[in-house]
Amino acid sequence: MSIIESILRDHPFFAELEHDDIELIAEHSTNVRFEPDTYIFRQGEPANQFYLITYGKVAIEAFSPERGPLTVLTVAEGEVLGWSWLFEPYIWHFDARTVDMTRAIAINGEKLRAQCEQNHELGYQLMRRGVHVVEQRLQAAMIQLLDLYSVQGAV
Amino acid sequence: MSTAVVDPMRSVVYEVQRIRKETSDTFTLELHSTNGSNDFPFAAGQFNMLYVFGVGEIPISISGDPSKHRSLIHTTRAVGLVTGAMRQLKRGDSIGVRGPFGSHWPVEHATGYDVVIVAGGLGLAPVRPALYHILHHREKYGNVVLLYGSRTPNDILFRREVEKWRARLDVDVHVTVDRAIHPWRGNVGVVTRMIPKAPFDPLNTVAFICGPEIMMRFTVLELQKRGVTTDKIFISMERNMKCAVGFCGHCQWGPNFVCKDGPVFDYASVKHFFEKREI
Ligand SMILES: Cc1cc2nc3c(=O)[nH]c(=O)nc-3n(C[C@H](O)[C@H](O)[C@H](O)COP(=O)(O)OP(=O)(O)OC[C@H]3O[C@@H](n4cnc5c(N)ncnc54)[C@H](O)[C@@H]3O)c2cc1C
Ligand code: FES
Image (cartoon, rainbow over all chains, first blue to last red; front, side):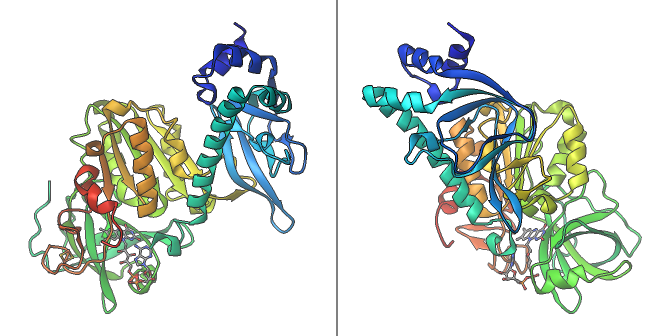
């Protein structure tokens, strides 16, 4: 078993996936490293990859012409970066900039999508996991929107 | 432990000794007694009724170190009439103090356990005394974790102290903010996102939570997902108060009076009310 395969197997995102599926995903995965302040992807670019962060921290940013880059979320070790590869039009909606030196397993989402078309069980399993990440992010974003620590938010 | 109060309805006059601006709307007052008896025992989590003469009286938690009785420390956010007037106080001005009142964080019962403190916004002030106590008796506890969420980097309360705690090797301190621009290099996101990865053993953990009620509700859910049981989760509630001694019913919350039975409650016994609206 390759090191990448064992990292995938131990990651909660792939928990309980079949051995063959993990092997297949590992074939489409590479180990990547980014210096601090590097853009991993930018808004508008094709979303053909996603990342399991194994070390470091990545800021998800939206750029405002008036205020510059605004960080809406940071994604750190153990978390998944990027879900736009799962949903049409497969375009990144935000920028992802490394805050610290960051290591990750990059997974080719385009290839996985093609596999999922052939193998609907794998497609279902990945979609289920992707939706779970989206659900957690949405819930967090909704709490953030409430602005709980402002004077109005607290009462 | 509830400390005895001589006449709980009578304020004692204190003098403002020091004022520290914490953030744009939050300040800390250090008060000294005017009758020379600078001794004010309290337990972590208790509050005082502070009377700004001619304006009004409000409950404010004690945010100082319970092992230091000589000065009385309160951290307040200016949100309205009384807190606004309190912000105008100068060194040497007088203020009335009644207390201490209410229940406290169960720091003694938490010995032998990992302790996770989850605070949001101004909620760090009422739990700070518990953290002081735990750090003074560090050897009695397992892992000690502080998860703190603030609105922006500029709103981080007690920032220098938080940084000092973070520099210690025996406390895990994680701070996150809801929004940030450069050059903030820390975490961005809600405080509950830090719970899944926080280093504690759920079967042997006591959690203290203090912050806005919605934040506390989501924090409880995340702690439960990790396996912390509700009898080991403690929350601090706020309700408007008048007498602070269980007479007037102003602070009633379900069958409880927050002033007397709270403000610190174990979640298992108030779960039913906490999950209900408009109580
Ligand atoms: C047990 C207990 C402990 C407390 N500890 C602290 C503390 O350590 N530090 C602290 O700053 N406050 C604390 N509070 C809250 C504090 O008592 C209130 O903020 C205060 O009573 C407001 O009085 P005011 O006259 O300034 O505001 P008011 O003039 O009565 O209200 C003005 C506006 O502020 C809003 N408001 C009232 N209370 C709050 C609140 N809690 N948060 C945000 N907005 C509010 C009102 O809805 C209104 O819109 C505590 C409350 C309780 C019950
Ligand atoms: S404030 Fe009067 S009963 Fe609690």
